[in-house]
Structures are given as structure tokens and as C-alpha cells.
Image (cartoon, rainbow, N blue to C red):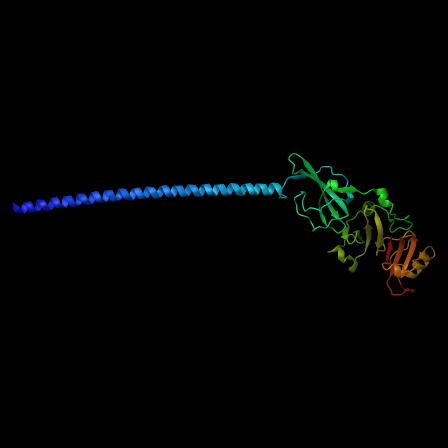
Length: 318
């Protein structure tokens, strides 16, 4: 009997111990669950705060980008005019240099350089900084080949009559039938061929003797074996000088490049006077004749001194 009492006591003690352990474990689990829930709430709060911060930053960035494009970017809609006015030379009277794109906030093309005379290429219209208004900008290029945009109001049409008052003379001599004072469009239309355009103190239109020939760089033309007719154009698209080293463009009396130089010089010496002092006309050769005051007929030859074998290598009138 006593043994059974001992066994029962042991069993009771075990039951009490196990029950205590179970209860302690439940308390521990509740504490762990509570801690987990608290940490999860903190995590969710941190996640929400992060997402709010990212959204706010994105909204700020988008707004700044939108403002940048609105105020400063050239990525704007602008439209070329369907029927633009006639192109031609204009006097540039703007107070600021040309812009790289049609906007008053665009950077300048070339430092603080401002051209005096430009050729208008085309016009474009775009919305101005004042909402609802449109601005007209003109794409222009100057005699050095610098191009950019200017307000249409900054371009003044050059008065043809005033420009002609500078005088092209009476054009008593011609080359290939063309004369100083002709508009360059006349020469382009009559020759009906491609040309090269060189910017060298003025615009020089170069028409190659052989239409099938090509030159990689027009500036290399004087040092090449190609021959051409060159037209120098002034401020109003009128030709101020014509020069050729090609036999295809004779003078009015029929003399041309390749002819005997002594015969040619003797003929024109009977018609015109030589330049008075060759040293004062450093850009001309010594075989230059005065057509009128300020207008010359110049020959260049293939020898240092004129002799029976000399031939004409180029002819120029201005």
C-alpha cells in the first residue's frame, strides 16, 4: 500500500510539473506573439513612411523636370510656316547674339558674337513664354557660316536700291555671259548645275567646270586640279566679283583661259588703262586693267614674266 502511495505521489508531482511547464510555455508564447505583433506594426509603419517619402521625392522630381522642359528645354513644339516669306539677306539689328534653337532662354550660338548681315533660311512659329501667344523665329546664317535663330523683329530687310547705290559699275565686261551686278539666282538658273558654297570673307559660289567632278572640301578647290567659275556675292545676293580658271567661260570679246597671254594683254591694253600703281593694289596681278573707277579686269598668267609662250590661267572681273 505504501508503495502505491509513493507511486501516486510521484505521478501527482509529475502531473503538476508538466502542467506548470505547459502553462509557462503558453505565457512565453503569448509574449513572443505580442513582441512579433509590435515589430510587425513598426515594420509596416516604416514601410509606409518610406513609400510616402519616395512618392514625395518622385513628385518633386517630376515637377522639376516638367518646369525644366517648360522653361529651358528646346524640346518644344514649333512649326515651320507652310508658305514662308522669300529668303534673302537681312540686316541683323538684334541686341543679343543668335540662339541655338528658337527660344529666348536658349544658349547663344557663338559667345557674344553678333553678325551684321545674315541670310534668312526659314521661319518657325512656337508658343512664347506668355501663354497663348506665338513667337516667330527665323533660322539664319551669316557670311562666316555661323547659323542660329533670331526673332523676326530683329531682322531688317536690306533696301535693294540703297544696296545698289554702292555700285557694281556698268558691267561692261562679262564672263560666260555673266556680269557683276547680276543676282546669284540668275547664274544658278542659267548654269543649272550643283555648286559648292564657300564662306571666306563673303559667300563664294563655286561651279565646277566638269559637272561629274567632286571636291571633298571646297576650301581645297584653289589647290586642286579642278576648274570652275566662282561668283562672289555681297550683302544683297548680287555678284560683286566673277572669277574663272576654266576655258568654258570666255570674255565678251571671246578671249578665254588658255589663250596666248601676250595677245590677250595687248588687246585689252588697247581698250583700257593699266592700274596706275600695282603696289597699291596688292590683291591684283600686274596684268590688271581699269574698267571704271573701282572696277577691274584682271588676268593671271603661267609665267613670272610675260613672253610669247605665256598663257592665261585665270580671269577675274569686279
